[in-house]
Length: 210
Image (cartoon, rainbow, N blue to C red; front, side):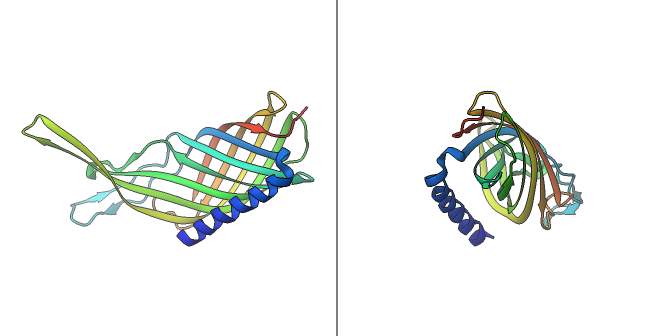
């Protein structure tokens, strides 16, 4: 997964740079805010502890950042990343936190060149769930310290689908409400392989839309 992710990022960067060299006016960049959801993971035991523990739902506030290039006939390609702004408790009683990141590269179909443009995306990518241990300790009951340490990542392959609409408030600035569906292979970190996401982005298009 790490090799695939590294190669994919380099391929995307090279392709984007090449395409933007001759089609810079069709380059769009955007940043958004939303939320992704998934159900509770199944109860599990933890070595060294008595009883079973249930993981949390996937939720919280996510950021979205991405870019795309439209080539011709409404077809194009792009990439984006969605990340939870802060850590959340996975097993809070054990001091285990998590922070998810979804990343993907997509083919795009965006017909039209007006002030309101629908678009559809489909592609592949990965889901990276980073885990941290958070611990607090106090000396003589008065001097306390908090330690938050990264311990490992859980990486999964994903298929990505999305539908959105771009509303151009100026010829170059657009608002884009978007619904994403992340199908994550063997997503045992949570209760389902499907993780829907809902977001609104603000973007800049180098091409003027009248």
